[in-house]
Amino acid sequence: MFHVSRIYKVEGLGRGGLHHLAESSLRIHSSLRAKPELNMSFAGLNDADVAAALAACAAADSFNHKAFFAKVGLASKSNDDVKKAFYVIDQDKSGFIEEDELKLFLQNFSASARALTDAETKAFLADGDKDGDGMIGVDEFAAMIKG
Image 1: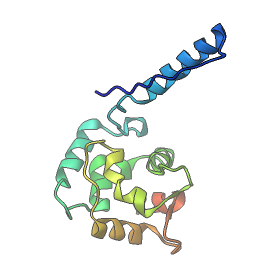
Image 2: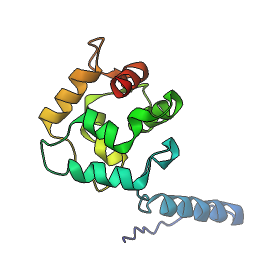
Image 3: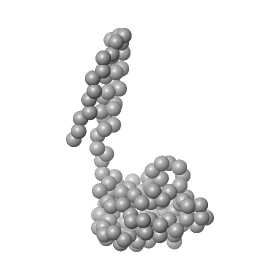
Image 4: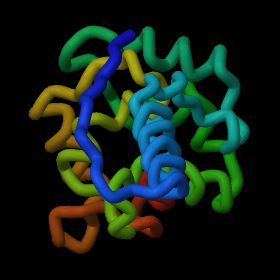
């Protein structure tokens, strides 16, 4: 745990101004808390299946996206569940999964998971990017999982 504090001399603030300053400070403090362990249970994935799939690709250069999708059970989920997973992986909410988001793909399933190697990331992107724009769209992602 860490604590950040700074003291400012604030002049000209009435009673209400100090209250708002204290509220802002609380909001900042709350946002510094550690994020909880992520999971894809909202997409109907079983935590034990996810843990087993992550363990199977814990070593560098052992990740195979098709095997991973099958092990976590994503390949058998509805299109709506696959789209929910896509929007979690699309961290910047651009509507596409870019190479930097793919590199951190496993961390969407567990915050402590490793990053993909460059070779794994490039193979993953090459398989999913059917239109050659360097990104994976939601329909490309669904086709990659279901295919």
